[in-house]
Each structure stands twice: as structure tokens, then as C-alpha cells.
Image 1 (cartoon, rainbow, N blue to C red):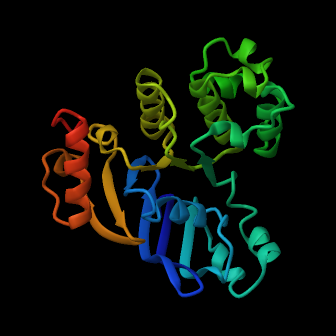
Image 2 (spheres, rainbow, N blue to C red):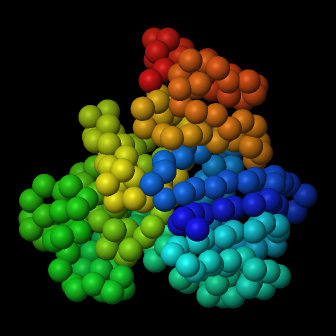
Image 3 (cartoon, rainbow, N blue to C red):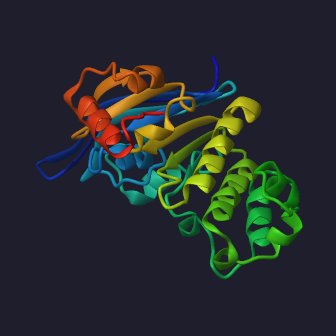
Length: 270
């Protein structure tokens, strides 16, 4: 069976409020899937649940997560159902980083401000069973002058450089999948385009599966393989970037997103 992540019937509820309502989502190696929706649609909660970063009851109350790498299948929720936070963290210990990496909106949230970049990447490489040299991983993330970057502290990095450092950490740790949560929203257009090209390269050349969480439809044509559209915590449409570009969408939420994007993009989508 090919490497894949399968999330089935995810329900996240706090009190009587349902935040994510029976969401199904899959991600295969060598595939880039766009998880699309407006703010508050449940995109980030869905992604974080795949890393065990959402509490249980209140929080994740239903759902099955299967992560298959090689011949090994991991089912973290099956071993922590009805348990507390410590049991959840133990169940997801092998998943976080080792199988599934996370690229946050602000990459500095994932970096230690008091440690040089090289030390941090080297520490993650050791966890992945490699030597402590950070330079090969910084190079694979297409950081120019990796020797110089390794000596820097996170506050000395630009936004795009910081994102590439987090990508280098995911590669060093051995992640087969990467959840990229609005990773370019704070970057200028030139750097944004470079990071998106980098994510596509990781899919095509390194065989990673990438889930790109975004509300910006303009970045998806020519980048994603397929799209899952969320609204009010539910999947309302599954489509392709080409259909999105052509306005061939059917759910009310998807139509509204397309119209709003065209209104701010001179009528051009992709």
C-alpha cells in the first residue's frame, strides 16, 4: 500500500458547538492537496487534529486517523480514545515530526529564539537518525549559503528563510507528509511564489505528500493536484484547481470564494 494519510469522520466539538463536522480527508505521497475555506471554516483545526494538537472531549470526539508508511500503519486515535492529554501525546509521539511535519503561518513559532539555526536543524537530524550536520538539510531546502544561515539566530532570518529552515527540519526528521498552514500569507509576492514552488518541488522530487491550507485561491491553479473545500466545518466540495480557475464550482461557499477572489484580483484566478 502506498504511503498515505487517511482521516475519516472527524468531529471536533466544544460543548454544544460543532467546529468540525464529519470531515473525511486523504493525502498520498507525491501529492499536493489544497484544503480551502474562509476564516473559521475549520481548516487549521482539521490539520492540527492530524498531529494530535487538538484536545480530546471537549475537542476531538469522533474520528479515525490512519497513517501508512511502508508496511506500518499508525492509528493514534485508536489508542487514546476517551483518555487524557498525556495519553494523546504518547499516541502521537511517532506521528509528530517523524511522519507528519507542520509548517505554521509564522515559522518562528517553530524555532527556538535562543539557539542558532544550525544547532536546531542538527538536533532534529539526530532525532531522524542522521548525523548532526545541518548543512545538507539546509541545502535541500534551497537556502542560499547554508553555512552562513546555520550561524544565524531565528530573529536574523527573513520570513522566507525561516520557512525554509522549518522545511529543512521536516526533511531532517524524515517527515513523509507536511501540513502547511497558510505558510505564505505574511510574505511578499516574490517570496510567496518561491515558497510555493519549493512545496511543489518537495512533492515532485522528494515524494512528500503536502497538505496546503489556504484561503487564497489564486495560488492553487498550477500548484495543487486536487482541492477540498470546507465551510462551517464541513466538506462542501471536492474539485480540481482547473475547475476552480474556470469557475466550475457548485457549492455556495466555493462560488462565494471564487467571486470574492476575482473581485480583488482583477477578475483573474490563477
